[in-house]
Image 1 (cartoon, rainbow over the protein chains, first blue to last red):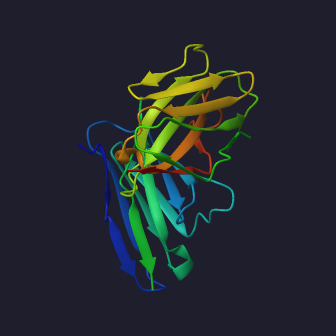
Image 2 (image 1 turned 180 degrees about the vertical axis):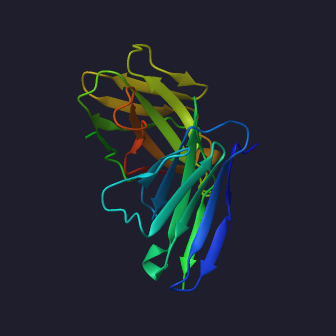
Length: 112
Length: 118
């Protein structure tokens, strides 16, 4: 069964609102979690890396004030897309790492 | 910085045939890991096979095997006796072994869309 879950699996929100995506490691403690963005028919683009209890490290070009990442525990990381716009519509994938790397099933975000 | 290149955007073969997906990478590291991931239409990322750079023996997992050429920085995936369920996007990925200023992270190639035809 799934070892990393994401919630919600899909979400539609209005432009200007914020939306939170949760990523949970179900059967292991993840020292590090990663957030990716994937556009249709493209590869995964790493947005940020988060370690439990510390600030996330964002990749170049990713707005940290727009994509807020919190890694409050060894099993939970959240990504909040603030003031969402249609161009933020995408597929967001998290992965969790301890001795292994496991991916969540992804969250499809549509901003109208 | 490390880069991963998959030069085949799309491939298509008949069921039961053998297919090889290409991947090259660029790095100055000596120790690292290489991966092939499968992303079916469900979009769940699935690990297909993993190779440690210090191991000379090519990794195999049932019908999946790799041809790892460290000097050439090449890491191809061979799928034998292909099945309809192998239809998916396949991503090659690199991860260095040592930790420098933060966590080790996966660097993905552009992907190859593989279609297995009945």
